[in-house]
Length: 194
Image (cartoon, rainbow, N blue to C red; front, side, top):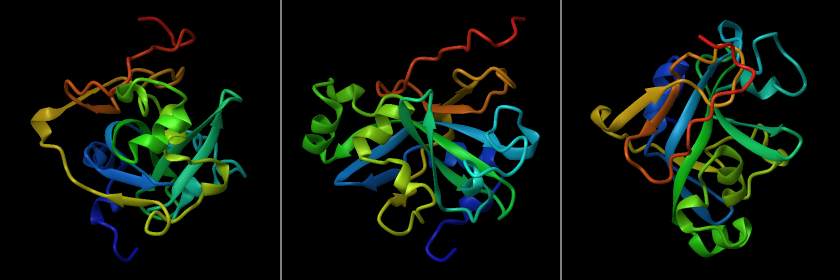
């Protein structure tokens, strides 16, 4: 994977917090990532790849450094960075960020939202960046670029993932503490209580 940081070859729970602060550029907009979630394929019941390879999740199986894009709730595109060893099916969901370049374009795509809300939430982030289904499998070293710029560990928080029913208590949601672009935590109403 020439030109990519070794961080993408690590286990997904290590890759996810390492992507905080990264600048993702696509379609004339750059977003600084402030919130992500880790999904670990065959060992993670909340992962799209938990039950194995399908046409939908094939990109998750590698190689690392590609974009996995899927349609959520029949309404929104969401994007993930594939990581880990080839064939492992690990990915980091890009949950939120701050638009740091291309503000005018992001505002047009997001239809009058406040600047802090332009890329808050995974569907909003992909909309701000202009990412859709045809970017699924795209090598991030090409038209989509990712430049890693780590956030110090003392500025990173973690907790349960948003809106998942299975493995809902796994603390693999990572965010930059106090950043206003981070989305609100929403527990799935279908997740078991207690």
